[in-house]
Length: 144
Image 1 (cartoon, helix red, strand yellow):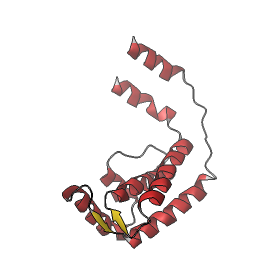
Image 2 (cartoon, one colour):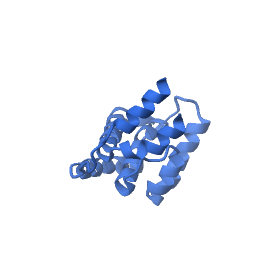
Image 3 (cartoon, one colour):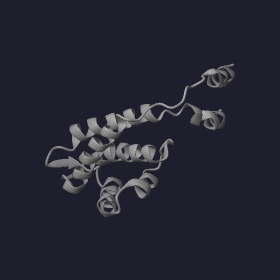
Image 4 (cartoon, one colour):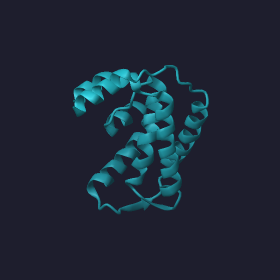
């Protein structure tokens, strides 16, 4: 079943809707979790991943990869990689509630990225009309 969906998924990918979804997630999590002096390390990934996903979509027009490392290696500015690697290490090897001092360089990057993506989103149009018959057919065949 999953293979059948994967084959046709690209036809239903919406650049604009995906960007709105990811930037909304990034903006809300940034505002909620990263504005204080001390933050939970893992919360950075609640903002980094959707920002990097937006950058991927804007650059390639395709769904972003699931693996954070792939997004990071492709979209994160090289000068921030060491700091994000430290956050990854903390996330993997520290207690769930590990609080750290806010990382101002990453916050600056995230804040600027959110504003830049929101600006670019204003000019993104939806350039295809979706035909739902094929997807409906797959769904109906799978539930029979």
